[in-house]
Length: 235
Image (cartoon, rainbow, N blue to C red; front, side, top):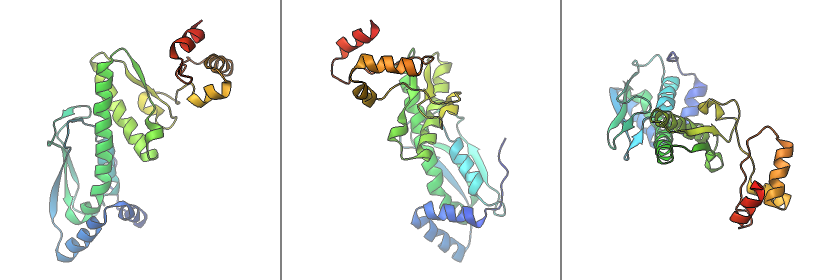
């Protein structure tokens, strides 16, 4: 169900204004001086992607004021659909003055999610029997990017599952685990635990002792002896 529009309080307006590109703020001041208009934006990507735009639409609805010209959002593609490059994924129409400063926040939520959805789909389809764990968190810039990338990967996985692939089955974070239908993050060991244990085998033994109910994945490349260490752990 769509969220109801609400009049944007000063706190929300300040949130947007401190994060938007400055030329949008200056442009809003010009429009307010010379007269507002009703405009339509078209959002597109310069490469092929998978549609994952719910976070962008939610941001529009959250920060667009209810006392302005009514906001109208039109989807050209459903979540999970392939979108050709240069084609508008969705359009939105409303007060130019009130939409100007939202452009930065909207685009931040389109690119990361849509590209992540496309990449996750391609990974899953190239290795259809492989179960992937989303471990992008260490490469993200914070919660916003973690959640956008995880949302996109979940959308891409959903489409890959329709074609018979396994796709992404979980996340390394509790924060983003619900996107994959999980209550908590998953994972076994970082490389530094093997250094701490002194051997690959000992790290595996310590892990099993501490977490006996977990499935075990062992990293066998810490010492550069992948074959011998893997065989030792398996034995």
